[in-house]
Length: 258
Image (cartoon, rainbow, N blue to C red):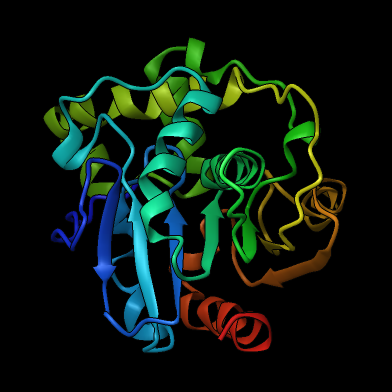
């Protein structure tokens, strides 16, 4: 769970998108999808680690930060259609998706919509810390009490100590976390669509929730699988390996997009 502040607005801002860097001469746009309970501010530091010619846009889910009063979306496809509609005006340049955990599943669904309905598939999908949708294991954490959910997030490294120590703040963030987990648990793709978009999977070597073999299931969800890259760390390996992670993303961008 991130407690970073939300980035300021950029041109064409809407409720779903936050521009972390917006350049008129950008050659591509990296769209970042947060994890369960996460927010756009999780990606605040990313622009300084990426090529200057790449815009960085983060998706802001409802029910957190400046969208605290917005009700959660209960259906993954519905959310994907909303995000895809928000991104469509930005598709005048190549879009590249990075999704972490829950964000990987949502990024996949958004890619399906943009390819199948809008005809503008993303250039690459980076699927981080998540297996492909058809390989997901059943879970009912969202239906359990707060303590079970907090314990799970703490084990993954996804709960900041300052949030755990502040009951009022914890009470504010738990509804969004629970809604995100329910969204993921209820998500069942109608069929496994093989994207034309190449997919690169990424995972932490010490992630007990998603190992490299699980991440490799993304090969079934794309016509071009770019393999699995492992990074030191657990489920939230980007926190400690940001420079290494963005370096790998940049390598793919240089080879295929820029």
